[in-house]
Image (cartoon, rainbow over the protein chains, first blue to last red):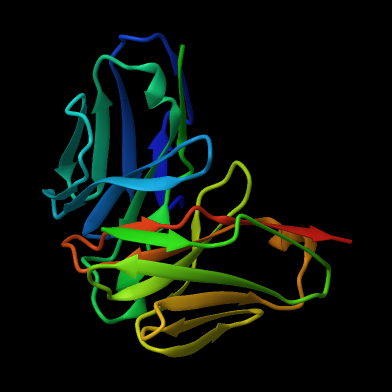
Length: 118
Length: 111
């Protein structure tokens, strides 16, 4: 009965490889996000999708390509991995685009994917 | 752009009260959220303030003053399990419910 799930939990790979991280939410939410958390625990938004439509794209290198096949899934594909891509990547979801109600402003995070690029 | 400042670390004993301040600068502002993250875990939502004043949820309370661009999270009756990082996050006027996070405050609770 996991709310937001991600696979894999750990990913160790060589520079230059291509990898994907998958995310699924069973909360019936309309909006999903990808965040990157670096080694200093700084958490930064990368992308946001609402009903499969890209809403936020935060100056992320175009080696990163999100894909939302339906509103319950948001995957992240990374091409030509670099050392600086090493981080924890979190998927999150929220009920919808924010409104006045607190419930719309609550984001539910997945367990994270720790990516290590060697 | 948006920027947030919060202390990097706070240490307190069990049963004590801790206040984590957050000041922000933003070109547009809708509200301030707080998230808790244990080591190795995911951020979990604690509270959201869209209006000035105090929001209370059990042992945790959050306050916002829009005129001062300031908020705080109050942790009362500290327990060992409250040892974690706490992040304030601003929801600005950009589309898509974008949250900009502060650098986090690591709270260490000692017996």
